[in-house]
Length: 273
Image 1 (spheres, rainbow, N blue to C red):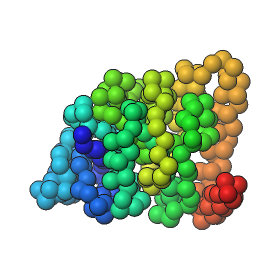
Image 2: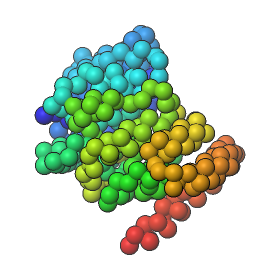
Image 3: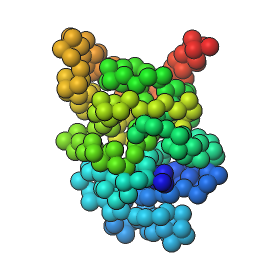
Image 4: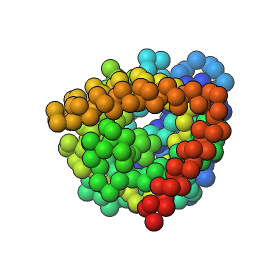
């Protein structure tokens, strides 16, 4: 069994180098696979050098048809007995023992996927706070962004994720949450008590919040009972308004918005204690 870290990188060398730094800081050598376009860009040439140096174990071509098709290409290349962890360009592992600790959980678990907490970072590189993994994964909580987990902190058995059909390619932003919902219907998953990734805002999901909002509405309608229907639409329209003002704040007053986020994390941590 190997734990394979798959990184998607589309011509973003600076972000890739951030991920590389955390990969190289691990106590054990990381089985690292990168999915990237073969276009002779500076990013592609850098990845080729990482492969030559033995840091990257394999490079898979990104055909340029979307994020989730690229992730599925990575999945298809991994042997069934291995496990898959998506840490994309810009994301990081928070500590030097993170990789080995996750392997330890995998070796002990009877479940086919595991999940942990994550640190949330701003697009300016500052850590805003910690989001701990819920004790029990519930589809309703996940799809209403309450006690949720991020895809950067979920690890799947390769065979299991293939049985689930991988990521839906008709979704552009929320296919990772759709996959978690489908996985939980088959296997409850095992919680990792540790925080195992750092996710920085500013990427595709941040820039396309409204698309994600629309997709989550359709996902809730698919997996939740009609009991949730009124709440689902109210939540959708609330998020439309909220996303508008959050984006406005991020453009005009980014420091204030990030301070508010950090303050909220502080309050939540006091409640937990």
